[in-house]
Image (tube, rainbow, N blue to C red; front, side):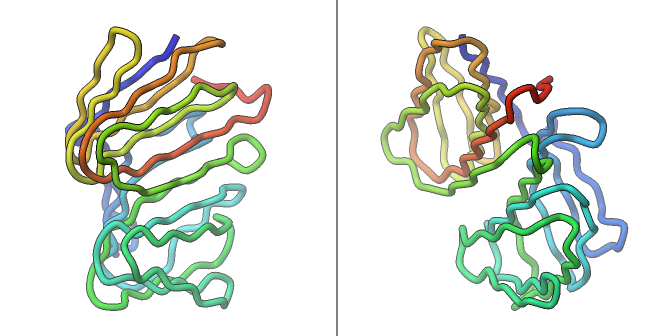
Length: 198
């Protein structure tokens, strides 16, 4: 069995940063109140520090804008091209500097030791298959264009900025077929054995 949960921007939670430097739009999260994983969009408007998240591993992927420079524990790293990405520990001291105006970034956070995340941005022209794997879930975020997700007799449509949460609820499970035209951000969430999943 495959569970596909569609999510649209109307259901996302948007919050202003405490330091007033930007916005976080939460797409989805899993786990307890402190989350085991979370996917969001960050709109960064001004230079400033990132909030610390001890015990969390982070992946940041540039979606739009002219880029940022992150000072991570006094080591400078730049994201300058669309879909450039960077991984770093959430407890690190991070200061962000905008290179030329605001940016929009895809942000994935996972609890270390419980979940691992692999983030890939890619175009889709035609079709691609997502294969079931044990202890694995997927987020399929449509950055641009449109998509249809087919599994057996079910079809789920998604447009720009929509997201699909895919859970393979049994093994063996049927494959998921993605068809469309546009650009996707794919997040593969791999859970450690025994990790609770809601």
